[in-house]
Amino acid sequence: MAFIPCSRCHAKYRGKGTAVYVFIGSGPANGRYRLKFCDACAGEFLEHIDQELAQVSPDGSVAYPTVDRCMACVLPLDFTQSPVIVTAYPKGGDQAQWLGALHPECPIPSALARWLQNGLQAA
Ligand SMILES: [Zn+2]
Ligand SMILES: [Zn+2]
Image 1 (cartoon, rainbow, N blue to C red):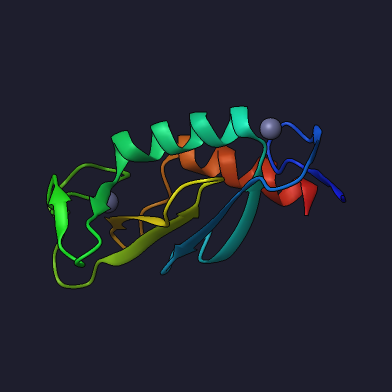
Image 2 (tube, rainbow, N blue to C red):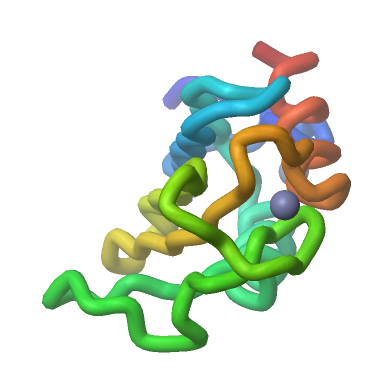
């Protein structure tokens, strides 16, 4: 079985970790990111994401809270918003998806940026 380095703590874990895909529609961090987390980091990341973004139900509706504020500056969004989509494939669990949004000119929130930077260093 292969050893895979965690995108965040860089510890090598064995077997199936949690895969996370992050899409950011525009701004300085615009792009798609693929992260792989060990169990401990996956738990922390998903908890953080769950607080910051709105979870999408399996039927496609956004359960709570509705996405009407920018994740960075917390001001109301308008029609030019940039989507932030996080899709997770947790180990031993079902796929989960979260939705957030930013003004195109706003940076991504620092907490999320930190997770992505750690992931990118490992890539
Ligand atoms: Zn880790
Ligand atoms: Zn904003």
